[in-house]
Structure formats: C-alpha cells, structure tokens
Amino acid sequence: MVDPRISIINDRLKATRNIVAVSSGKGGVGKSLTASTLALILAKRGYKVGLFDLDFTSPSTHVILGIEDVKPKEEKGIIPPQVHGIEYMSIIYYSGEHAAPLRGADVSNALIELLAVTRWSTLDFLIIDMPPGIGDATLDIIRLIKQIKFIIITTPSQLAFETIKKLISLLKDLKVQVLGVVENMKMDDSQLIQQKVLSLNVPYLGEIRFDAKIEYAMGDVNELLASNFAKKIGEISSKIVD
Amino acid sequence: MAVGFPMHEWALAESVISTVSQIAKKEGLKEVTEVKIVVGELQQIELDIFEFALSQLKKPELEKAKFKIAISKAQLRCRVCGNKWVFEKGSLSNDNAEAIHFLPEVAHTYIRCPNCGSPDFEVLEGRGIWLKSIRGVK
Image (cartoon, rainbow over the protein chains, first blue to last red):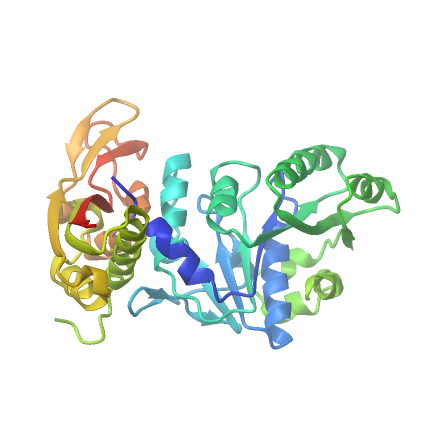
C-alpha cells in the first residue's frame, strides 16, 4: 500500500521561495515567539508570508498573535486564512482549545496530511514553528521538504546549547542549511555562546536581551512589533533575506 | 455535486493522481487500466466528490483507468487496556466529526476508549486514503 499524499507535497510547496524552520533542542527558549515575530516583520516589509505552527501537541503561535475565530477556507483543499497579513495554519483549527495527545506516528501523519492538503499562495517565506528536539516532526520536515532551512534558537544556558549542538550536528550530517543561531533571553555580556556557535562554523545571527515585559505583548501584535524583541528580530531578519 | 468543490477530497484526489502518474512512469506503463484505492472510514471521505475529482484530474495515461474504491472500517485499539473497537461517526457531534474529517489525528482529541476512557489508542486500519495496486499496459 502506498501513501499517495507524499507525492503532492513537493507540488504544494515548489513555488515557495524560502521555507524556514524555527527550531531548538529545548522548549521554552522562544521559538514560537521568534517564528511569529519573524513572520509579522517579513509581512510588514511587503513579503508574502505563511506561518505554519507545527508544534501540534503544544501550539502557541495563535496565542502570541491573538488569533481567534478564524477558519481555513475549503477550496480544492484547505486555504489558510490571512491574519495580520500572514497566511496562518495550525492544528488549533481542528483541535480548538482541547488537548491533542499525539504519539510520533500521529504527528507524522498529521504533518503529511496538512502539507498535502494546504494550498498556500505563492509565498516568499513559509515560516515553520517547530516542536523542540530532533524527533518525528524534525525528521519528517527534513524528509519531506528538500529546500528547508533552519534558524536555531538557544538561550545563554549551556544546557540549551548542548541540545542545539546535537541539532546542528544532525542538520550538518543531513546537509540541511542552517541559516544561523539566535541567542535569546541574554542577561549579561558573556560571549561564550557566540564563540561556541562560531566554533561549529554556523553563523551567529545575534543576541536578544531578556525582556521581562514581553509577556504583556502576548496576543497584541502592535505591542509585540513595538518591543525590543521585535527590533532585534527585524535586524536578524535582514541577515536571512536573500 | 457541490459547486466549486468546496471540499478537501479534491486535494486528496490530486495526490492519488500524482502518485499513480509517478508510478506509471517509473514502471514504464503507457496506459493505466485499473487503480485500486482503499478509503478509511475515519476520515469520512465524501466518495462522490472524491470520484468526481479523480475523473476530472485524469491525465492522458489514465484516460481508460478504472478506479476501484474499497472502504475500510476504522478499527481502533487502546494502548492502555487493549480494547478494540470500530469508529462510529454517529457517536460524535457534527463539529468534532468534521474536525476528524479534515485532520484524522484529532481523533485523539475527541474520541476516548469506550472501555477505559484513554485517548492513547492506535488506528489499526481505516485512517485515510491508500493506493493498493495499479494495473496497466507497457
């Protein structure tokens, strides 16, 4: 038996100029906030942008962007709604506020299904908010999307760095492009993480200072765009736009 | 037939046609005569729309192809207590059944093992669409 969905995924994404996975080894380092803010900033600059929340068991980009009461349109597939100028796709359209307790094989199946039936427009950027780690979703994205590039988020914690070191090692082994590493929640002037990243021959895209007030911007796109976090993501985004 | 094909059966039919064409090319088939497809009940595919989409999307090498579609009951097995049961659409609200139609994995959100109440079950059979076999002329 052959799963017919795999063959159509490439067709669905072939017109997309850049597909960027925002990933990390650990949770809680700011992946979803980076992915959401990056998508917003690129859209504000006039690019056609899609945001796909691939963290099926713990989706959060809809909370960051204050997305409520929108649904995809059905037209020969699923057309993601435009929210804040972004084509937005998430499991929350189907699971709502309920838990989606998925094992690895279910994550793979859901990922394949949504990639096979979602009809993005001709995007300049599709930003993918990844679940943490190097499990099924990461392996599937690498398997199914040949042109995928990664931005990796860490914190100044050496524990977080240890996990992204493994992620970077995997991506290098699989010849997947790493656009660079962002060091989030920085609280001092240590250059330790920067040095460690550069020693791996991976670009260090920049540091973002810990922002105790960023929590107040959750759900409020204007507040988010006015934050120091967004200013830094704006600078970083200029480094990845070709 | 719904106007404008407002269903995602079209997208799934596209994936079937694309895969059959790729296999036909790989196997050197000039003409595909028969395609056997298994459709699982969990996804609640609208068969008339799916079949219509297949007929509309046919490529030249598929012009004479007959699509034989078999329905597979959705069998679930609880990983906690081992209970096996069959999915019944009627046990769900319309909204929840529709969510599973679009993304069968959210079955784990809306369905519980009738014996122990766990959402930790596996779908043994009948999840989505599978290509069973292709016949053709070289």
